[in-house]
Length: 192
Image: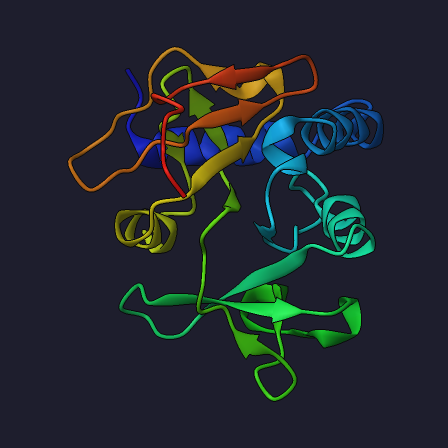
């Protein structure tokens, strides 16, 4: 079995050459926004995708159009502290570290109530139990430890693998949305 570091390198390379990426991204977005998970949430915690990630812009736009609260993350420091800030549109984003679009804290208010929320968690690949290979900093694992909300990983079907090496600090997502289906990974019985 590969280590997380090895998987990270393998998947990053594979992700740069996905055939039909735009269509796959549209299918994943459509499945997610047509789900009860999305429809029943008041707040969508999402991330602004990078070019080689599944495009989240349509999810963000749809949630804003639907009148939902939309919050994006800001990594506050190198110690793994991450907070989400409510945005009103893409104009509220600025280019941060590593070219990541993040909320402009001068325009955006920090999310202080995550009840009835769904968080979209980035990952390079996921296993069938919802464990993921992220970017190795642990921001989302820490955030998920502290908040009880439904978590969703967006993942190309080809990048759902049998087993991701996980340690005690890793938090699995509740659902994985691929271009084909929504997979329940966790108990799905959370309150909040």
